[in-house]
Image (tube, rainbow, N blue to C red; front, top):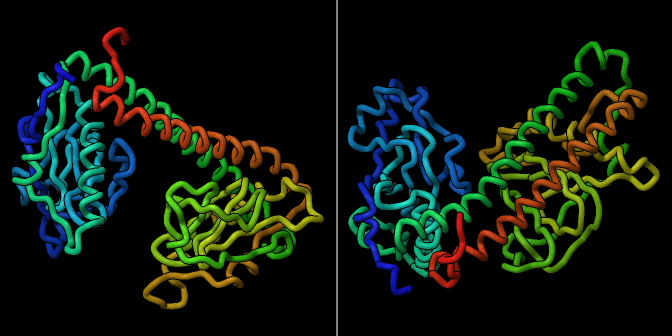
Length: 377
């Protein structure tokens, strides 16, 4: 650690706090400039998309708050405190995000990103131990320090960690492509021409449907099994209520109707549904059924069809989910749906392992615990 020095965040480059264009001005929204807030997906390395986009007029209304490609954005408020993401194009953020435009002549962008992830853990810990809503303003944010080695070592550390994230991102792109292929197959199967002479079937003719019995706080940090709630990412738990292939459906909240496939031991939140194949059926029926539910059910349910402020699903919504069923065609498509589904899950499992390796290496590399002097990258 003798060659490592502490550098204040404010000395890494330019620090910018975001601003929000007036929401009452419709001319400011609907353009193609991403407007990043902590409610967007900041769990990935690069900004993929945002919930809102602004126009050039919107950007000009918050001049001096625009950040370029390769800026590092850090959420600095509340439960989202410490989330970090890198921009992929010119972006505007709201005032809850502080961004660093890194001086890349002195600092490696990947190394600084991973350093910010470590800093984010500290900020997030403080947010969970504070009784008030924690806020890190620009002045305080700029005073935080990170440890930096020489530029060559920064490049090595950044390259090692970035290579893992690049593989994760590649898997994500493959999965996105596979999902598009599955959607195309589904559209072909369910075209009006294909289904006009089909019998109508309901999901409960094929599946047993059940919910969990636990609250979300039943999860444990290092549990053995997946614990599916209505949030996008599963938690962990030490109990399981099923072992096998299942269609998992979020039953309420912002992600109502969100559907995923899982194979293995798992437990469920009390408002999350699992659909498992009835024992007398061909085991592979679960795969086309999964895509039928995933691609069609959410269209009917999203938005709270019962007028509730919070959208929700009741058991009958799943049980009586209807689709055209032509057994010969269903079984013709089944092998392809199976291959797509199993490949996606294999990639997801690999991503979990890679993320675990990255998260284990991260603090060791960022502290200088691992000697990279003899590694040529």
